[in-house]
Image 1 (cartoon, rainbow, N blue to C red):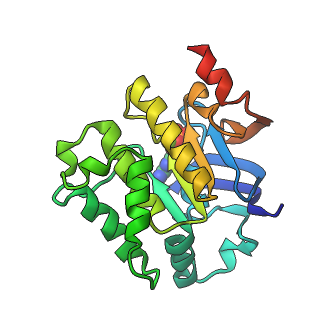
Image 2: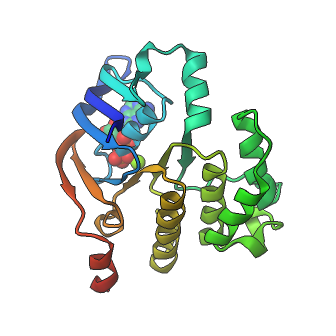
Length: 238
Ligand SMILES: Nc1ncnc2c1ncn2[C@@H]1O[C@H](COP(=O)(O)OP(=O)(O)O)[C@@H](O)[C@H]1O
Ligand SMILES: [Mg+2]
């Protein structure tokens, strides 16, 4: 299978005045199309920096990132924005739903903003809402929903444009254990059904086990990449 993401010797150094903070050093890996991969590491290990680079939200200071074979750095800003809108879905720790409109409108708005050129696929929206267990909650505003429900709405929002790649930064970071497990299961199920490639960042080694493969990070470096012990191991561990 073709790798959909190729990170080749990526480095990122933040500069403010004379201060230099190396956040990523010589990070290389490939992600196969359709894989579900976790990136795990302690706070400050460079996970969010990698998330922003993979999403085209910031540029590496060295190295090359290829998405679907295209060198990100060779794209114009407009081309990069288009690739991001059409092919990448984002899920954040703090849900980032708009508070004044309903769950349904949040999902619909994401579709509008992506400018796919296609009308909203209402049957997909209904299907995702079913998979994510929020069918009865769509006409509520975010503050009328639990944290777990808000994150499931945010997952539907990320998936409604059928992105090839889903990037999630600590998607269960604001949830309790029970909600985390449910949300991870649903993210896994819905992304498998839509044949998506998922990169999920987490500082929680147990949550990381939902993936097929785990990339371990420390101090801005990849320390190892290995097959996950598997979801069954997690299911039986508690
Ligand atoms: N905008 C920034 N400016 C300067 N340093 C930053 C910035 N963002 C992150 N860093 C630093 O880069 C390192 C990696 O941060 P980050 O990618 O947020 O790690 P993680 O998500 O694993 O906690 C940390 O030392 C952090 O302080
Ligand atoms: Mg982070």
